[in-house]
Length: 271
Image 1: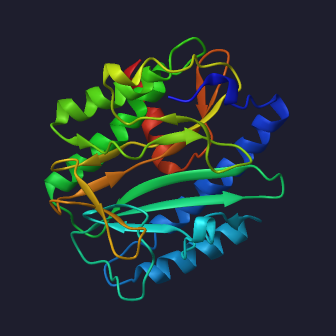
Image 2: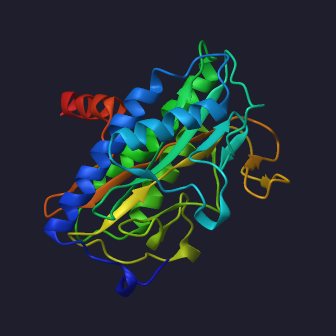
């Protein structure tokens, strides 16, 4: 894992910028969720996302990033991440679709989050996969505080996926976030002792934690478009991501939409 000396600590003022850009991204997801219906193309979803991002006074950060050709990533079913929006990809009843979205506003600070949405009526197994992936994030979120090791995030995610009997992708993971989309540290979505303990979390660290869970085995391949990552066995995949700030008493989520508010209410009810 990345050396802690490269991790950028954000000042209170910078943290406020990240809270604001995260709220804007949350509102984009709340609007987009209403658009996810059978019969719409991923190209049209991406255009709507671009409009909603711009309505918030932001720009989509994925467009042109390392040459990526879409405004957002749209990944259906066995597509795990980096799906390119297309007029030919029409979502249908029973699909699940991951929308990974980045935004930046005039502060130059960025948001980066993902939701996996149900399209119409989905199977119980697809619902279970989505539930597991979201639970992976929130189990990690519960333990966040200064003084823990970065590897404890990976361990928390791994425990949940193991409990459900699902696999975790090894090649991709979470990351630091700020004025750059990808900052140190890299956050593994699985844990084994050879990865080490990683740096100690400190107040002011800002992280994008993003479990990527696979129904089948964790073997992947990249399609000929050189972007889209799919499960090799073509089984369902799921991706969920939120941005967090480590505070003196724990952590706060910045990319807040109705999905996050629901989870936080459920956590509060269990206390």
